[in-house]
Length: 368
Ligand SMILES: Cc1cc2nc3c(=O)[nH]c(=O)nc-3n(C[C@H](O)[C@H](O)[C@H](O)COP(=O)(O)OP(=O)(O)OC[C@H]3O[C@@H](n4cnc5c(N)ncnc54)[C@H](O)[C@@H]3O)c2cc1C
Figure 1 (cartoon, rainbow, N blue to C red):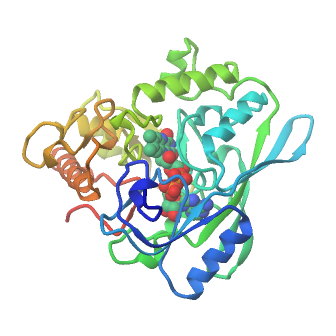
Figure 2 (figure 1 turned 180 degrees about the vertical axis):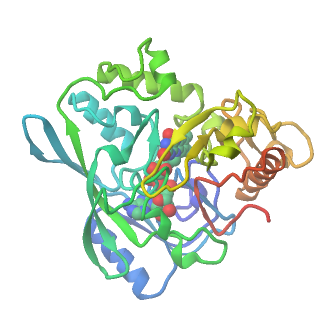
Figure 3 (figure 1 turned 120 degrees about the vertical axis):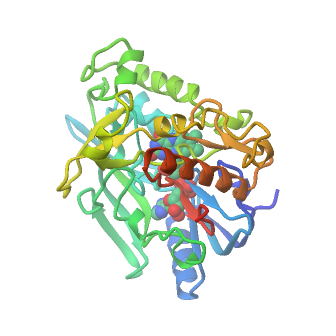
């Protein structure tokens, strides 16, 4: 199994070789590898869990720095809170499992999200009514612009829906490999967890229903974790190597945020969620990308049948969820891109709404 083949390190299991591969297990190795690549003007791709990126079949013409730093450190424990520092490479779900076992509240609804802790602030990972911005105090990061370690607070990270100041410095493009990774490389993440022993108030109707509770009620942490894992599992959103529905990047498109009049023009049964972010001047609504895809005629499993544009079944929408684009075993990046392009264009034709990919696209883009 060639170490430098991106398909061996990404959850969609696609992507060609990198010119150079460096695995780093200490912070010093990490900052040195980044500084060296930048000093030599070599394109740099920082990769951790590989669960939110789609890399070209041609591979990456530069250095991949594979993050493998580990560690959960308790910084401070007060009567009410525990402050923890987690190394960027530490597997995120292991952190959630640890917090639940310790009776610490705040991240339990983020159970089962693949990938690393250091990537969680990049797109403000979220699920089931929670996101990392709610518990993140600050990060330590290598700032590639000034070549030193800096601290950025949650406010400075300007979190939004699947967005942060970090993500906005990644240029998704076919040619701009120099900006495949962000300006700030997260070294560690500091979280504030609460010593309550029960969950944060439930903010997601499907989760409340599964627990037979009302919104804003709480439940034991372990029960929230298990219920979220079960719900995610039923949608193919927990990684299992035997299940091709999980050979994906999770949700391939973000939920579109549109002005209120655009949302009003959709059928009454189209899901709509109130949405407001700091700085918004117009009232906006978040729509369900999965609903828009499904109701544009792209049902679960689209692509598996031998139809035009279906890349002969090598790639398809998940058979469990229309928002995940999956590798059925022998797909290339280009196969996934082809399905994504058909779906994006079909949604635009049906609803006039432009879907935007959630994963970082490296050396590849959807069709014009
Ligand atoms: C089955 C499945 C389900 C998913 N469910 C969810 C979900 O519910 N909610 C959600 O928000 N996401 C979800 N995702 C997406 C993904 O798991 C998250 O975005 C995760 O945080 C990515 O972590 P990673 O370590 O795999 O990042 P990678 O894929 O390795 O990297 C992603 C991007 O972040 C950059 N990056 C990685 N580490 C760092 C670092 N330390 N500093 C700076 N930049 C860095 C990379 O350069 C790249 O641009 C899902 C993915 C899959 C496959």
